[in-house]
Image (tube, rainbow, N blue to C red; front, side, top):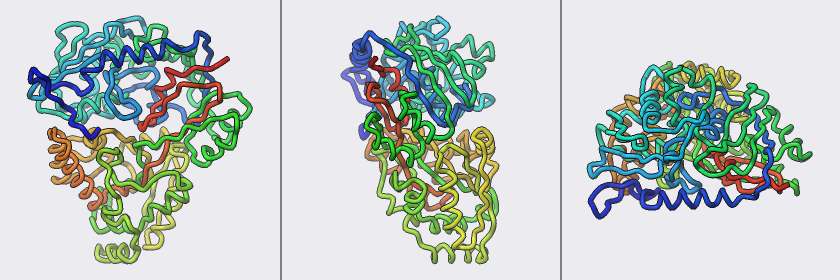
Length: 517
């Protein structure tokens, strides 16, 4: 990821960095899957937080993304090293000026209703997620797209208004999934799930269970299991008990306390992987007194990030600035007030006219993350030392998401998704055209200018410099208080093999899992 996203070929055209090896890599992936044992089984799985909806373009909750990435597919995806590899697209190519991006689709790709995946589906999908009325989560990532051409069924041509370095990375998200044009026209996206991925959704009983079957027509290879039966067990100690008694083969663990107990079980394996997602205290700079820079900075100076991490997450993580991807991450101790300074915080409050403090409410979701309540409590205690009285309001996840999307909060404890590129990670919040500006409620010319410069800059060293300045400024103006990154955890029985965890927290690796009989 430290390399430029574009390389120059002998003919002088820009090519997607994975282009040369995409066909070979796809063949290797297919070969690896096809060598799975002939015997198959249904994978019994458990997690603690269920999906909140089925529309891949709109969902922001991790629990929804984890389900939908097994059913839908984007044009490209990220591997375990954050490299862009084929998904529905076998190859891609930029023109020399970087303003035209052409994809060649896998001619064998089919949706789970039997229809072929064509360029018409790609065009309709991106037009849908770019339409403001859709309310797509990743809309801001694709506003450089002026038009999409479909010269034939397996060719999609994206015509861009400007060079857009991070657009390929943005396309790896399930929020950029390709959906059937027929379902778009029928208005049924979100009421049922018809994708082109490795699994079909046969049944969904919200907050109870999902039943997935293997997609026998999946162009990505042969799925080694017959299906996945997912049980929703809100108590993660119950998930651990089900693993211990072999009622469950595989589980997604969100609670670090429960995860630390897994290695004590000889029959179980724990997969523990650092992720790009970040824990953050979101302030609402449109609400008084957070409208004042000194107040926001005082809150930042009053927070002991390491203490919150140690108390709420048992130290299972690392204090981080806004940029969590390895290619751009910096030393957070160099950012504004990352060393707690209570006296400075009190002085900043006094200078802003709030020497006696003030009262505010912080919202947090039950279950996502499971540490949200503990994080809120530690932050409540720390802010009390400078006179800020914080009322904690816990919400069910679906209520929290709706409230969060409306920006209807003073402060919010959040776990937000990371991306492999800073622009695709943050443009929806910190650009003037960002579709989640209502959530961020803050923008200034410096943030917007740096984001736009980073978007078009192809030199990797210059991009790091641009986004380093972006991160420093964002920490200083303190619209949010970044806390830390943590880990993704999955646990499995010893007879489960083949799962590969990634820094994005994706469960797509279940497509290659085998269960020994």
